[in-house]
Every structure is written in C-alpha cells, then in structure tokens.
Image (cartoon, rainbow, N blue to C red; front, side, top):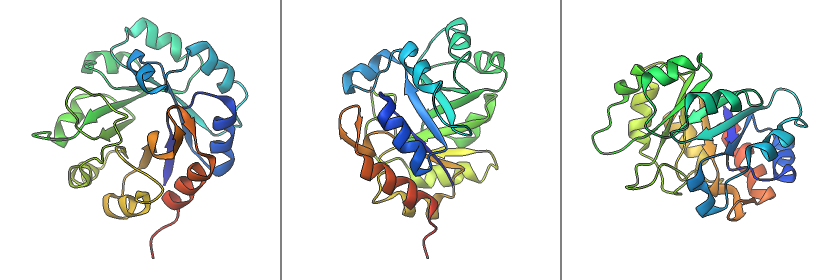
Amino acid sequence: MRVKICGITNLEDALVACEAGADALGFNFANEAKKKNRYIDPEAAQRIAEVLPPFVTTVAICVNDSTTRIMEYLQFVDIVQLHGEETPEQCAALGGRVIKAFRAGGDFQPESMLAYSASAYLLDAHVAGARGGTGTQGDWDVARAAVALKRPIILAGGLTPENVAEAVAYVRPYGVDTAGGVESAPGIKDHERTRDFIKNAKTPLS
C-alpha cells in the first residue's frame, strides 16, 4: 500500500514522514490552501525536495495553474496532482506525470476519469465549494467501483490513523492520502499520528 502525506510545510515533518515509510509527500501550491495553513511557497518546497531520501515521490498540488507554470513545478517535483477544472488536453500535455483529482459524490461516474491521461486518479470527498482538504470522509463505495476499472486509484478524504486500515481493506486502492488526519495544528503534522497512519495503512487487517 502506497501512502502519501500531503500538506507538508516544513522539513521536519517531511523527514519524519519519510522515516516512517511514506511513499510520497505532497506540497500544496494552491492559494486556497492558505486558509488552512497548508500552503508552501514553491521555492521552499524545492529546498525540502532537494534533501529528501531517495525513493520518495514529491507531488505538487495545483488548482487551475497554467501548463507553463505546472511545467516549472515539474523541474523539481516528480508529479503534479491537479485539483481544479483542468482539461483532458492539459493533462495529456504534461506527459503522464499527473494525478488527476476528482470529488467523488452525487452523480459522479468513475468511468468519466478515463477521459484524462493520468498515471493515477485521486478520489476525494465531495463538499460543495471545496476542492479538497476538508476532512470529510469520501464515498468508499464509489472509490471501490473506481478500483474495479483496473487503474491506480488513490483514496483521500477524511482518512485518519483510526480508519485507514478499514478503508484499505474495503476499497483496495493503489494508495491512500491524508493531510488533516495527521495534523496537530493547521499545517503542522503530529509525528506520532503520522507514524500511526503509515503503519496502519501498510498493515493488513487480520
């Protein structure tokens, strides 16, 4: 099970997550992330990325950025996670280094994801007026249906150390993603909860 710890804002939190076994770290470049203190300046994220251990994937979280700006991010991160109204054409132009995020709720049809050229698809909770990071639990049934399409699905939305093992057992996603579920304060990670989340995500339920 792959685990991404998102909303990284400082080197200490990044290194703790890596030491605990995180497969990926997310850096939020969307202006709306400032409301929850999860925004990080791209230059600061680059400095963190440069000192991370090998085999940890770095991810830039973007909302409706231009292709030119996204390509600038891809100079120092491994992949971009697109949370806005980006088009299939824009995703295709990025050469596959894309995770396309969807708010899976209401009349969302998992098959609609396949119009986007992406290496993986992230399913987050559907909350009106929000693009992610709400702490609301996603629809695990919809995510399970998406997994049946045989494409890499990353489950997000309200995942915590307390429920991630159950989510993994039920949905069987490619990976899981959390930000607020392991915070001690907005934008600051609780290191024990980070360790517990990663351990629980990677430990199959008996």
